[in-house]
Image 1 (tube, protein in one colour):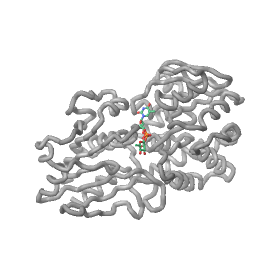
Image 2 (cartoon, rainbow, N blue to C red):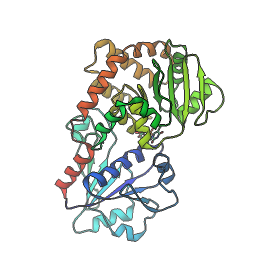
Image 3 (cartoon, helix red, strand yellow):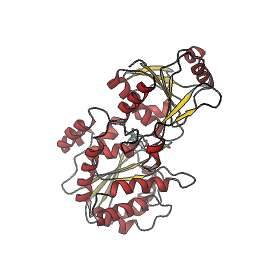
Length: 382
Ligand code: TRH
C-alpha cells in the first residue's frame, strides 16, 4: 500500500467505547497490515484502564506496535507538519485546526475518514463510504460505517480471534483458572455484567437470588457493581469481594484489561454488555448476550435497538425470539417492572439462544473484517 502512515484521532467523550474501538483498530492495522500507526488520544488515564501498560504521564510511547500520542491542544507544529497518508477521526471527533490546515496545504491530499458508530439500521449501507467535501478547504471526508451486512464496513475482528476463542472455550476449567477465578460449579450459571445505571438491575438481582438454579454474577468495577452492591448489601463491594443472597453470588472484579475482558465473555454462559465495543465482543464470544444500548437524549437508541433485534431474532423460533425481544427491551426501559417474570421466560430458552449465538458468530465471521475493509477502501482513494 502506498500510504503506510496512518493517524487515528480519538477523543474520549465519556466511558470507554471510543478508546476501546480505536485501540483495537490501531493494533490490528499495525499487526496485520504492517502500517505505521499513530494513535492520538486525549485521555490517557481512561486508556490505561483497558490497557494497563499505558503510562498516562508519557506523551509519546510505543505499545503493541502502535505509537501512542497524548493529544493535547494545540498540537506541536512539528507534528502538524508531518502528515499521515490516511487520517481517521473516530466518531466525529474534530481534527485539530492546524492539522487540518496542513492537510489542505499538501499537494497530494491525505485520505480523510470519519469512523462512525455501529448501527444495524437500514440506512447504514446507503451512507457507508459517502463523501463529504469540506465547505472551505480542498479536502474530502469519507464516512465509514461499521455494520452487520455486506453493504457496511463490517465489524472489528482480529485474524486469530475465532480460533483463540474456540481454544479457550474448549477447556472451561483451565480458562477460569487463567482468569484467576474458580471454575463454575456443576449446574451453576456464570453471567458477566457490564451496564449503565439501570432501573431493571435490582429486580433482576432479586430474580436471580430467588431463582431455582445457582447463578454467579461477575461484575467488573464500575457503575453496575456500585448499583448491585447498593441493592444487595448496602455497602460498596471492592474487587475481590463476593456477596451471596439466595441462589445468587455476586463477585466483584477489578476493571479488566481489554484482553481479559474478552476472555471473561468467552467463559461466561451469558453476558450483559453495553455501548458498542463490548456489544460486538459479546457476539464474538458466541454466547447469549443482553445489550444495554448507550441512551441518547432524543431516544434514537430505541430504533437502533429494534433494528438489531430484527436482524438478530430472525432465525430464532417464535417463542425464543419473543422472549429475547421482550427481555432486551425491558433491560433498556426507564422503568424496572417485569424483570422477575421476564428472566425465567428468557432463560428457559438458553439452549436455543446458545446455539443461535454460535451460529450468529460464525455467520458474521464470514464477512471481511472492518480493518481489512478500511485498508481496501483507503487504497482505492490513495
Ligand atoms: O464504555 P461504553 O459505554 O462506551 C460507550 C459506547 O461506545 C457508546 O457508543 C459511546 O457513544 C460512548 O461510549 C461514548 O461501552 P463499550 O463500547 O462496550 O466500551 C467499553 C470498553 O471497555 C470495551 O472496549 C471493553 C472495555 N472493558 C475492559 O477493557 N475491561 C472491563 O473490565 C470492562 C467492563 C470493559
